[in-house]
Image (tube, rainbow, N blue to C red; front, side, top):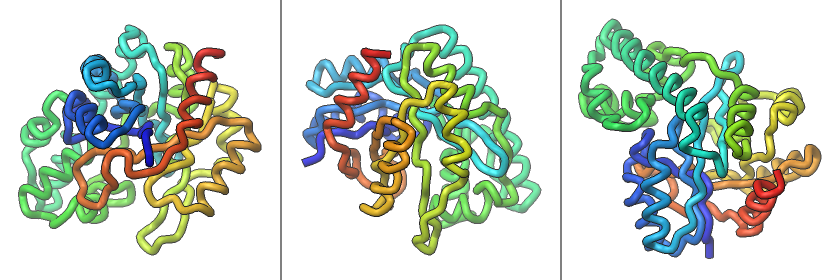
Length: 283
């Protein structure tokens, strides 16, 4: 029985559940440990920690920082961060401000393409959370221009799609260094993915990237993730062993898409949490 999910999102970024609701759901599903890792935001962590104390669920304060390399993006998870640190909060606020401008430009591009959506509606959907492409996708879905989130990304706002807009640049190494600076452990999120035909792909060369990131403080790889089969997990574990990295995992739970696994729906060994905690205490 799975008791761990180290990759969860709330309404502080682009998740469907508030921090308290996320923890309540984790308790109902008998999860023992979750990490709140909102995109470019730690604003949901305090409420999640409070709910965790009420429901007997350990909540690891975390963040997921979206970064860019040529031709793709890289996500860096931070665990056990000092979520109220003014340096971290300032940098994340700067990234979130960039997200707002990005969403506005996407709305302008969509209007030019004949699929106008109101920028104000995107902000309404995002609420207090960090604005992201899922909010643009929701606006497109509401307006009837697409029939699913996946179609919104494929047709309009995916990286190689016509309404895509680059984010404000922030490198993976800078994210690792920032997470270390505020007492956390950086982990490279979902380092491989599956294309629409089921073939495994990597958006970047792991062996070329990892030495630089390790030099900047990278501590681990996300090894357990939706869609990762035994062969993929073993491959990533071999990479982690080669570079002496921790391995973590989770569902990347948002609670939005019908196709995503439920909270705790990806098995993560409890020993992965224990080793992560030990490494943090010894940092």
